[in-house]
Amino acid sequence: MRAPYQVLIILYKKHNNNILYGIFYRNSHPIWQFISGGGENQEIPIETVIREIKEETSLNVKKEKIKQLDSKTTIPVLNITGEYTWGTNVYVVPEYSFAVEIKDEYGDIHLSSEHKEYKWVEYDEALKKLKYDSNKTALWELNERLKKQNV
Image (cartoon, rainbow, N blue to C red; front, top):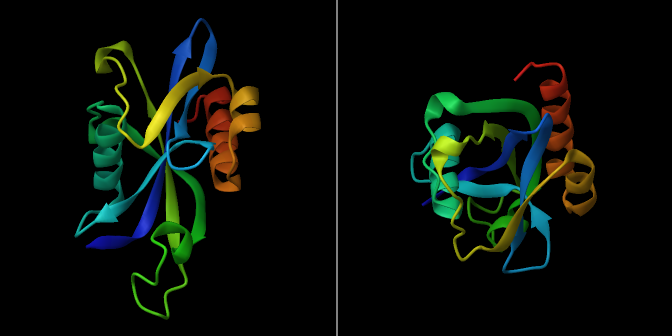
């Protein structure tokens, strides 16, 4: 059973004094976004993050490498599952944002069928390409934290 929340995950890496963010192009509709997904069964959000990264990129990330951001939003349930999955009185579910620094030790990304392609881009390009405001807000927060070395 799907849990009543979503996670948003920003992968980033440092390269030649620049910070690059991983953005992903969906197969189901033509948009760029960060990794996202819903919890399953009794998962807590951090467990969902680990599973979603593995499913969508094939990377194995350890819990201690995941940083929760302050950015949160709510998403209409109909935009997630297309129906009132958690009952007719549940209209929106929370989306929690996380960040993970990707290092060479993780290996290469191998995309799942959810995504057509991915890119490592700098902040300004990511901001222009991302569709959803929640992605843009979380990106802004992470970028500010990285500038202040507060991740």
